[in-house]
Amino acid sequence: MQRAPEAYRRTIDKIVLALAKQPLPRLQKLPGSATSDPFLYDDSYLGENVSRRTLREHGDAIVLKPGVAHGLARLAGLLRPALEIMWVEDVRQMNKFLDAQVPDVAGHLFGRERTALAAVREPFKDAFGPHCFYCGRHLPANNPIDHVLPWSLVGIDGLANLVLACARCNGDKGGALPSLDIVDQVLSRDRNTLEDIAADIQWPTQYERVTAAARGIYRGQPTGVPTWSGYKSTARLDISFAPEWIRAVRTSDF
Image 1: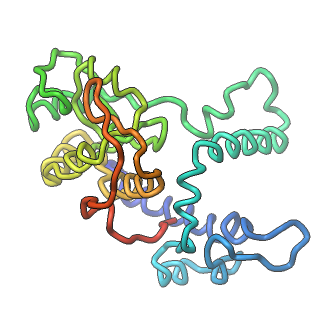
Image 2 (image 1 turned 60 degrees about the horizontal axis):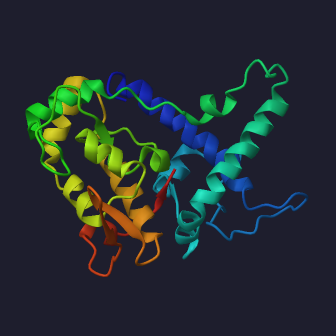
Image 3 (image 1 turned 90 degrees about the vertical axis):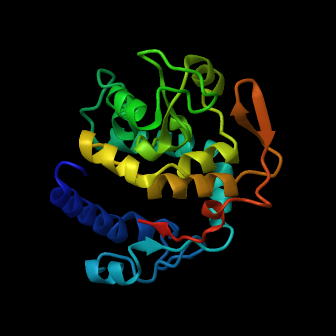
């Protein structure tokens, strides 16, 4: 995205068109049925004959019906691994050369490895200071870089989802969902500073994606669920007086 923006844009265009022609108009159609049952989103403008222009007229998005996003977010922990297993099995069946000697098909398809984050450390220290984002401790040379929204949950390596952390806070937080206050502080960092770092090290910020992911996650959580608020501390989730980024209304982008 950073190094070859025009090639990246063309690639995204191809992917968007492929999604709109193939899986999206089929997800709501039962085997043997000639028509779909649009219980997730309107798919009347999707299909093999859809054009890029039509998709742009619809904002390059599908709009989920009321309650669907909430339900998917609540069930993500069950749906995601189940769907990944089914997808891997289909890929193996369609590619007979994938035998026991090629075991990590899931890793290839879904990216089990985290991006190496060392390049982020020094620019973040220069911009924000050599201190743990969570507790303020002074950091040693090789401190961890933490994914605020857990990588295991969203898989986002953009600068907007990364902070400097001490080993103690990083280990204690693990894959826990952070408190709303923490996410609000992360999203309130100066965006121009993040963009400057992104340009220097050719690493995207993905601010909008992080914001959208956070919105979906926290809206889908039941009130009172414990969230990580600092070393050995938790806070019960309450979005009654949520920050603006969680109240905003968005569509579900391709």
